[in-house]
Image (cartoon, rainbow, N blue to C red; front, side, top):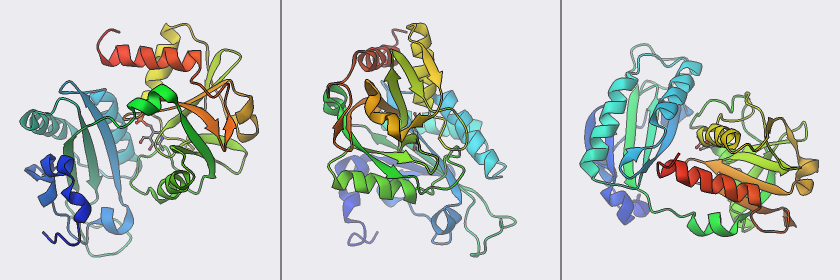
Amino acid sequence: MQPDLFPLLQDPALQQAIASINGATMPLSEARIPALDRGFLFGDAVYEVLRVYRGRPWLFNEHMQRLAYSLGEIHLAGINLDRLRQRILQVLAQSGFAEAMVYIQITRGAAPRRHPFPAGAVPLELFYVQEFDDPYIEARRAGVQAMTFPDLRWQRCDIKSTNLLGNVLARQAAAERGCTEALFCRPDGTVSEGTHTSLFAVASGRLITPPRGTAILPGITRSTILSLAGRLQVATEERPLFQSQLRSFTELFVTGTTSEVLPVVAVDGAAIGNRQPGPITRRMQEAYREMVSGEY
Ligand SMILES: Cc1ncc(COP(=O)(O)O)c(C=O)c1O
C-alpha cells in the first residue's frame, strides 16, 4: 500500500468494504489490479451497481441479466455468472451488511497493450461490497436541481461500460453549478438521461420516458417504475423528450439504483411545476419504497 497515493481510501466505509478478485476475498483497501489490465488501459470493461436492502440484493436477476447483455455486446465470453452470483452472496453474508451497495466490474484482463482482443487473457472479475449510508434522503424529499449538458458519450450507451468520461465531465459541470444531476442533450434536440440516472417527465398526467435504444442505458429502476405505473394506472409513454419542452413538463424526476426516485424541481435554473416534487413523482416514490420494503 502506498498511503500517500490513496488518501481518499482511508474513508471508514471503504476500510470496512470487502473485495473479491477472481474468487479471492480481501479488504477493499488491499485489492490490487495489474497496471496492464485492459479495463484500466482501454476501458475494456463492463460493470453493474446493485443495492442491497436488509441484506438482500435488490433485483439481482435483472442486474445479472444486464451484465450478461453488456458482456455479450463487447464479446467478452466465458464469464460464469452463476458462480459470480454465489460469490457475491457469500461475501455479502460474510460482511454482515444490511444496507449495502455491490459494485461489479468485469474486464478483459491483463495483456500486452495492443488494441485487439488478447488471446488467452484471463478476464478480471472484481466486485466489492460496501455498507450504504443513503446520501439521497433529503434530496428525495425536497427535490434537486439539474442542468442540461451536451451528450459527449459514444453511440452505445445501452452497454454499461466503464468508459464514463462523458458522464464524469457532465456530472462535474453540474456539481460546479450546485446541481445534483446533468441531463444529456443530443444533437437531435432530445434529452436522453442523466449521468447515472434515467429520466421521466409528466405531461397531462402521463408519465413519459425516452424509449430504449442505443442512446440510453436500459435502467433497471426505469423498467421497475414503468411497471409500477401500470399497476397504479398511471398512463405511460416511451417516446423522445425534447430539450425545448423541458419547461412545459409539470413534473420531472430521475431514477437509479442508488438514487431511487429523485424529483427534479428545476432545470438550468428554471422551475419545473411549482418547484416542488409533484403528485405523480410522490406516488412513484411511495410505490417504489413499498416495493423495496416488500409490500408489493
Ligand atoms: C447512464 C445511466 N443511466 C441510467 C442509470 C440508471 O440505471 P439503474 O436504474 O439500472 O441503476 C445509470 C445507472 O448507473 C446510468 O449510469
